[in-house]
Image 1 (cartoon, rainbow, N blue to C red):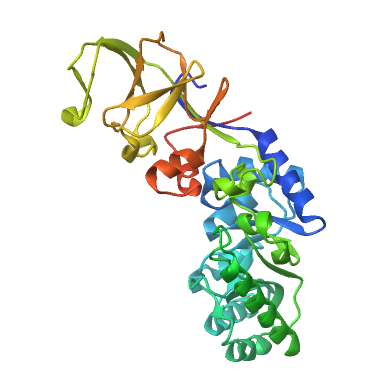
Image 2 (image 1 turned 135 degrees about the horizontal axis):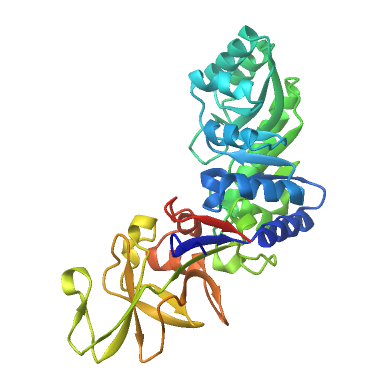
Length: 370
């Protein structure tokens, strides 16, 4: 841990590699697109991508063209699909950096084709079909005008066709299976019109774990690559290893007497004489203030509750009658001794999703790779 900042996100390269290999064992000979958007779910974009590349990732998926450019500048040579919506002025950046483009409408197809023609290049494109997510993509039952536009394009190479599942993490998988059927129908319609592609893909992490009929040619795991299943019920389907730990160190220790308060608003008062430690990490680092009075930390392999409101740069924990010293390690996410605080546990306290917790620590907290 850096002596300059006693707060750090530790990322296990071994866990990242293990998780990709576990997914590979699950999906067999299907290609794997490692989804590394949002700074690799908080794990660090370039270092995580390099780890996945070394472990055998076939493809990378990002949300923003800037993320794709960052990966290219970091030396990533695998194909990269930018899955987010396209702005016309960005097309040159895609072409200059050999990034795959998401085409979600006839107008966007024409814009991509025109930009590629103007620069004497061929654009690599994945066609986005909306089968029920309602986000971006041509609707699965309104394909003819989209295909008409596609067939006029001369500077587009159709690499893939894809969609996204809206309910793969739900207990009831009926709608997810309906989306898969709609996707198959769309693929058949494209094929009947003479459209050819290399890769069809729809499976996210939840589908990788529960819907083998969704694998098609390639799967797109995100959350599972980082060792976290979308729901507690899915956690043991594959032997996933959480890759992230959020750690700090005790910076101050004091004894409070019964009735004395901690932090803003005096919402927490000691019910008896107790010991309070201060931890130099707060909501300014991305640790949610809404966890005040709800979350615990690990010190010496034991759980202790956060006391009072979490501050911007610090928080306090009630260690009761335990012993602790300045410099002792504090774990906010991850294992310590026989205990572990998971992203899923924290998400449940907030009514959130694990993805939100993993992406919360901001760039004030350095990433260290083990």
